[in-house]
Length: 72
Image (cartoon, rainbow, N blue to C red; front, top):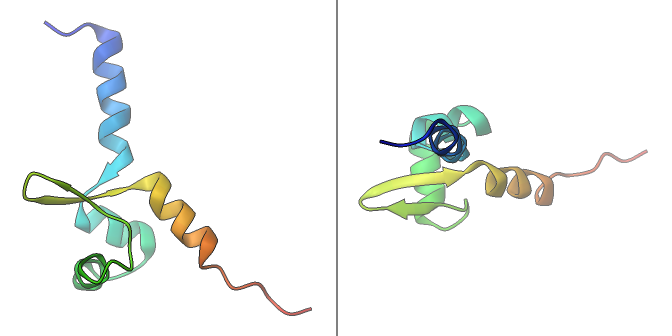
């Protein structure tokens, strides 16, 4: 049986990888758009078996790298 600390670390790993619906919500996009951008390698993604997952940290970096600064 898994210890409580192992279960807590598994929860944090589970929260780090988002499914398509969660990634779409996080990015403010439609799920179809997320699938398309992942297929075109415009969004960083991970294949876990046949499932497509998105690392929250990688999505955050993607947003930071593609942020357009305002002109002042």
